[in-house]
Length: 455
Image (tube, rainbow, N blue to C red; front, side):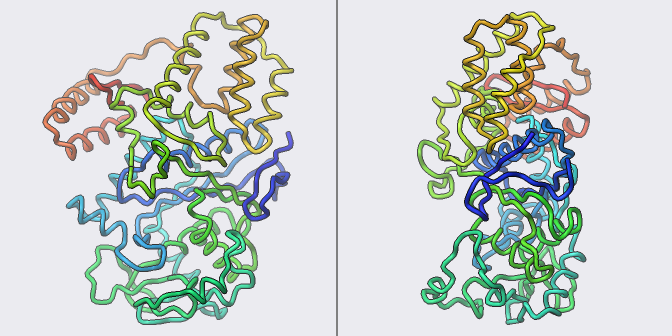
């Protein structure tokens, strides 16, 4: 199968030609674990999951690496303000290390609820400080850095066409810059290492430049290189990463290796809630809230499939209600049809004509529903849907499984958690959820109780 994807760097749909035949190196920017992920964040990870499933279905062995940002991501992209981990620690009244573990656990539970395949390699910024320091030392030796009172900074003027990924007008930005307490040579310069200074920090390390902590961007370049090399196939993330984070990753790698880090750059677009962009509206809806409102989390997955990953998607309670009703209808149809049908080759070809060209899930879904309304035998229709579901990931094969028996000790913890939640003791509720997860089960909160299932 020949895949074609939209490459943000080239601004066009291009053929995918991997560095190594039938292998794909994939790096995705992971969460900053200072709070719960909202459903807008999760839309990006669903897009990455569809990409990964599509490559795997095409016979590729995918090496998927994802970082966990547990230090260094400031509240401002301009290298000012509080570290998000320190802020989250202060608000939660727990240590930065504790909230990192807590919210990372919640994030992966969200992935499980949405049937998102976990990356093969998960790497945390705090566990790769040595690699980041080594990277900065090399950039310093090659003349790409300078030091001010705030830390070690990358000099973007040393990179030809800095910001090309975002088509930044660097001269215009420089001309319109405002004075900041962080004295940069150029407005687009960014921190590689921040000094702790007089501030008391929970997360800080010794370095050749003094005690401090790494900037946000250096972790991805350092860890991507460690696990995938200085040039790999595909780098993915949300569209908000294009102008700063990903532009800076490219600059760092150009400085150290002369490469653009990845041959293909792919970005998922924002989610809107009631036609307002999440970041602008201040709305932050979690998957747990959606589940507690009585929705199957896979209904949200279905809703995401109805829009192309490079288009805006609007979430509303009416839209997810429609998605849930459609998913129920599909499950009911499959449950009434006999097994053992053979997949129709003409359908498979049409399906891949849509999926393999820039992951066109809306067209693929429309094709599936057209097929279901056609004249094929119901056993063949069922086989076609199950084939499609290796990409859609709606767990439609669950219909073939008998009801599983949940062990008594798991149900005891679940009942204890239900009582705790009625008392609104959310911290203890989270601890019990984590305990259930560690024992290999997932608990999904519902309006009138909960459902427990095996991972």
